[in-house]
Length: 157
Image (cartoon, one colour):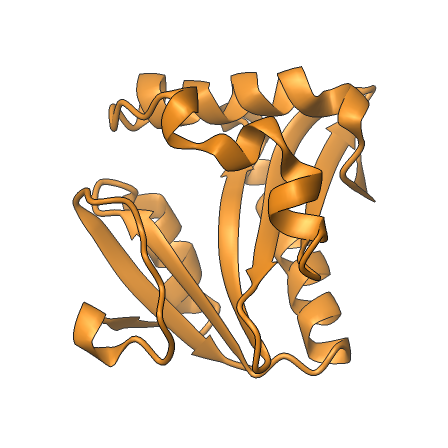
């Protein structure tokens, strides 16, 4: 397995992986139309200083993680997904460490994320990594997230 920066040739695999986890595993029923960032990762992530990484195994996408730059040293973690059969292989940890090191080395001070309330395994991961749960009134900057049953987490770097 290797962690690489986004490459367009993996776009369809990324979409398939994320939609499968969101809709088949988590049952949150998000369409691709509700996630325009997946259709143009370069525009939504990289253009404004964010990044998007892939975990690749034998040319298959087994995980994703990205962040959007919200200015003033603020990042929003997005699209952190790992294929079910790879979750015990520390793929998620490798992706998260790649993101965290990049943010720390580039002067970011906070990471915000929203996650579906049903994603209990993800909540556990975030809490072990030092994120604290917050409510919308505690948002440190303006951030619109999908209107669904989501939890917010914040980490100071």
